[in-house]
Each structure stands twice: as C-alpha cells, then as structure tokens.
Image 1 (tube, one colour):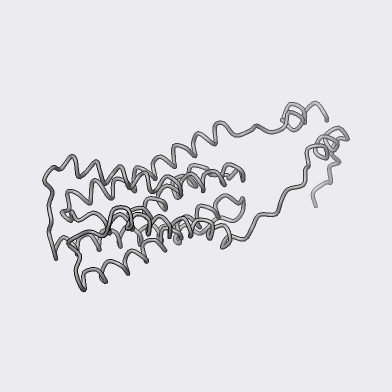
Image 2: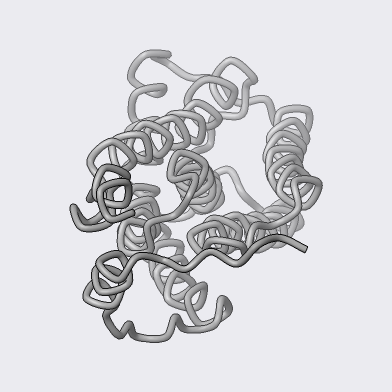
Length: 233
C-alpha cells in the first residue's frame, strides 16, 4: 500500500482559491442542434439565392436531394465528434471518427462521379469556375468552423488541433452538400480541386486555428505552477 502524502497547507489554500463554479455543459445532442438550423438555413438560402442548377431534371433532381441530406447529416456527425472532443475524458473512438469522415468523403466522391458519368458538363473558363466554387464553399463552411472552435476555446480541449480539423472538415462537408445543388460542372478536374479542395482547406484552417488556441490558451494559475508547489513543500 502506498504511503499517504499530506499536501502542504499553502498548496491546499491555493487550490481552494482557484476553484470557481461553472455552468453545466449542455448534452451533446443539444449542442449539435445549435448547428442544425444553420445548416438548414444555409442549404435553403443557397438554393433560393443562386437557384437550382439548370441541368437537373426529373429523376436527376431526386438523385441529388437524398445525397445532399445524407451529406449534411454526416457533416453534422463530424461536428458532433468535434464538440465531444472539447470535453476532456469524453473522446470518441478513432474507428468511429475515421468511419464518419471516410463515409462523408466517399459519398461526396460517389455523387460527383455518378453525375460526371451521367452528364459530363465542363466549363468555359477553368480558373473562373474553380475560384467561384472554392470561394463560396469556404464562405459557407466558415460559420460552422467559427461556432465549433468558439465552443472549443471556452472548453479548453486537450487536443484543440484535432477539434479544429474536425470542425473545418464537417463545415466543409455541409457547405459542399448545398453547393453541389448549384454548381453544374461535373468533370473530375473541377470537383476534385474546387469542391474537395474547399473541404480540405477548411479542415486545414481549423487545424491551424486549433494550434493557435493551444499556444495562446491561458496558463495555469501562478499559484499552481510547479515552482510554487515545490516551494510549498
């Protein structure tokens, strides 16, 4: 049996002075629901403002509506994993994380490949088309990245880079789901660079922002640093 060690009185007082009441964290499903209305408004707003792609007719429209809903659902699942990661000791198993992310990418690629094989539409100007889709996907995905990273910053997660990566990736998946209903270009060179590129850029941005949060997070109270503990013995 290990010997019981009494903590110094000064250290006990420092710990007691550093303890403050906190507001209980809402359940995960409640926090995810905060992003769900934004996803719905973004998808509907994008279609209303830009209009449904003109080449969609009949069964092709139905073929894209279901994947869009599934892709948004998978994007929200990725955001849920990111929010779960903000709580120390509540990490999601890696197979689940990889499975959800790979499923989102597989669905994205499958829908685009099917549309390319069914109706291979190209572009008049590659750079104009590429920049337009890349820009709008990033703009549509940024609000989700901002919301989740803001929550992460308040929760002080152990792995903020991981949270940022998932937040950016999930936001990009949701943005791509709605923008795919607007963009008619279906050739691989376009969707592999502009559409998939937007998802990857948002993920990388989230990772870098998570790194920034880790480096700028508040340090431990001066009363609790190792030097103080050593002097208190």
